[in-house]
Image (cartoon, rainbow, N blue to C red; front, side):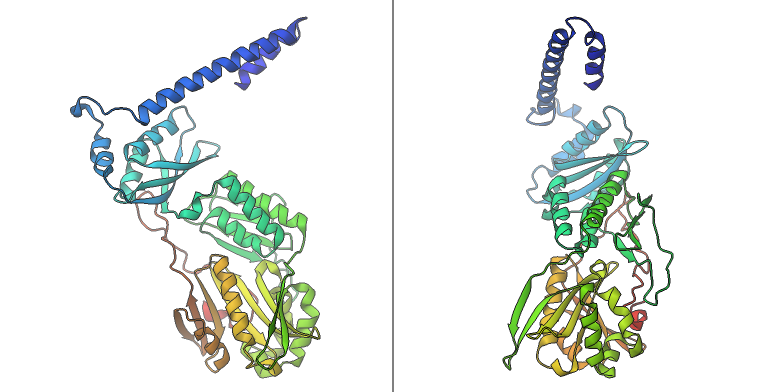
Length: 457
């Protein structure tokens, strides 16, 4: 339509009565386009919608006979997300839609991701529960699709893409800690590493990326506005340029808005009558957190950081950054910080950690913080949280047990790792052969949250 308009503009635009002729030509062209569109829609509806069955059963399509008709009576359905790559040529998408229609599958949403050669078509499908994904994959590839990938979807995927992107942008705008979570929800199941530019010891790490970012098939590297790099990995499915552009736009939004943390607070009354305030914390609380460290005993700091207590202060700048997770602070009526609770993003996993000043222990503060951190993890869509501690830290062990969740225990070199399962993990994606995608043996991020990091490796 654009080419036709340009041609008519060139032909009529410079004649004395060109404007009138051009307007008439545009109206005529629009009318022809509308008529053609209506005719095509009518043909398509008759061809794929309520068209009567063929009169001669012997001439029916073998795919419809073997797959679609046998599934027609099944009332139970499931949601699938499917991607496949097709040639960028007329009729390629129609061939896929024809196969999908034969299996009595509803196309709920469709996205196209243009590539240099070909196009990635992404479908959200409602299919009969009795239809094997391998059979659908086989038929899609027979119709011209390549690198076909299918996984189970859920009702959350029914939100259309523009609405989901706007929602994620809003969450990111309100809270800087939401950026890694927003990227994960935008791009599906992936591993996100926040790699700082400077280590906890003050040495440059060499982690950097150009302003425009880097896309390398299954890995994208984006410049972190707070310094360093945000690395996103999805080994089972290459990223498309469209996904890369969306991710880069979210990171740019985060950079423009600068540091931000919600300032809501909750006032609680302890059993002895003292009031405490629970709120979000960030790097502006660094001085107060260091002062709390000074009031803590070496044993308390050792149970939290699992190493030399003299190194405790150097971790705070990292722990209080919203880029690596969320921190809750507890302060007294006088404004003194007496406890910190951390929810730390660790690649595909999530760590919880607590530090309560000695004089304020055994008052229920740790359990209160842990419960709130677990709630934040559930809201973020985490499947589990883990705590790294020591068996003699009876307070942390009791707080984890009090959650009332299924717990797994693992002891490595004297360090106790307690994992609380929040929900059942989603099914792994399947490829063209129906095999589950392999997960790298170790996808955890090296985070300076304490020397006990090695216990999780």
